[in-house]
Length: 148
Image (cartoon, rainbow, N blue to C red; front, top):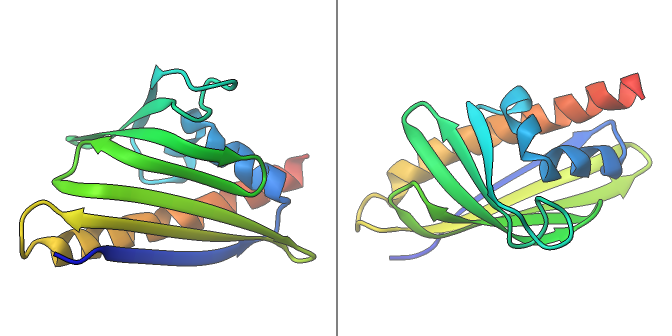
């Protein structure tokens, strides 16, 4: 079973610090993504949601636990799925590239299906979900940048 890859790229007319602040604060996700609710399960190193933090996101009946594995302010934020979906080896890497037009957000997720033949189903659903998430992040960052 090969790895599935999902990639989205959007440019937000906002500084990378604004985008990163939203990414690194799970409590903001329900306001700009399809996520329904957030709970911090375990604190991370240094920051409450720093490396090692375990975050619980709920959307409908789906409850996914994710562990922050990399957090480099204003540049990269990465997490891996601990539990919640019938996939394995899920990892998302969100790279922020500052430019004179704002910040380019590159969201790349990879995973493997647990059950052979189901990868395309998760690929289709996660591609839509992540697309909405990236677009929502960009819009929220632009809105926050206007109010600052």
